[in-house]
Amino acid sequence: MITIISATNRPNSNTLKVAQKYSQLMEKQGVKSELLSLESLPHDFIFTDMYGKRSDNFQQLLDKCIIPAQKFAIVVPEYNGSYAGILKSFLDAIPPEINKGKKVVLIGVSSGRAGNIRGLDHLTSVLHHLGMHVHPNKLPISSVLSMIDSDGNLVDEKTLLVLENQTIEFLKW
Image (tube, rainbow, N blue to C red):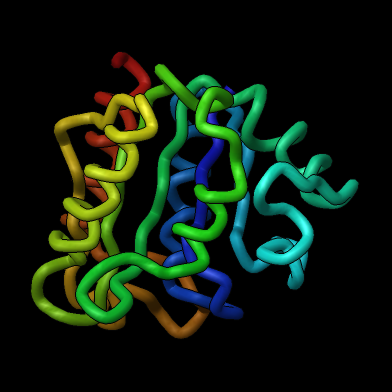
């Protein structure tokens, strides 16, 4: 199973829109994926699910989206030149042995010019520390605001093509 993670808890985010498109591209390749938006995390998980404690809600999320996944596609928005703190807290709440050896592909999203390259590098370091394998084709999506139409669809043809190509590479990996 592949889990696609929208790595922000911001409501109605462009990150989620890109993650949804990634899920559609997986389906186009005949692969069912699970979409996890960090917006759906229990609001108090950093108090109820850290340091060995586990709530029922968080355990259900782990059982559905994290433990059975062999691969992850993480769509990572730029927050202050890196990735969102909610993602770091989420990773900190998961015992590292659960994800050791699993494969990850990264998609950066930003309204600026660099597509969150720095955040992808920061996250790559953390994922390597956790024993995960990061696909070398990290995709930065710059100027995302100009690529989404008024209905919330990612419509930029060049971006859709590179996203689809990355999906195909990731599935073969």
